[in-house]
Amino acid sequence: MNKILPLALCTLLAAPAWSVPRTVTLSLPTMDCPVCPITVKKALERVPGVSRSEVDLGKRQAVVQFDDAKTTAQALTHATTDAGYPSTVVQAR
Image (cartoon, rainbow, N blue to C red; front, side, top):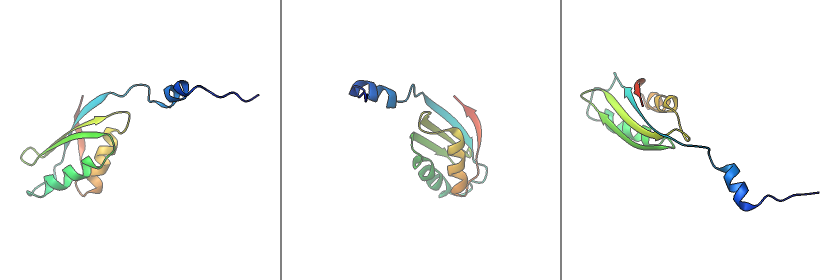
C-alpha cells in the first residue's frame, strides 16, 4: 500500500533543523597590497551562506558572518586559500 505524505510534513522533513548565524575572524598574513582585500572579499562572498564579510588590510584580517547550516569556517579558509591567501581562524562566535 503506497502512502503519500502530506505536503506540510514533506516540507518539515526537508527543512534544516536549526541554522545559527555565526561570525568568524580569519587571519590573512599574506595580504600586503590594496588589491588583496578585494580578492579575499570576493572569494568569501562566493561561499554559499556568507551574508557579510569585512576585510581589513591593516589588521590582515577578515570578519565573516555566515549561516552555519550552509557553510563552515573550514570552507571559508579553503575559499581564501584557493584565492591565494591562506587563512586561519582567530576567533569564532
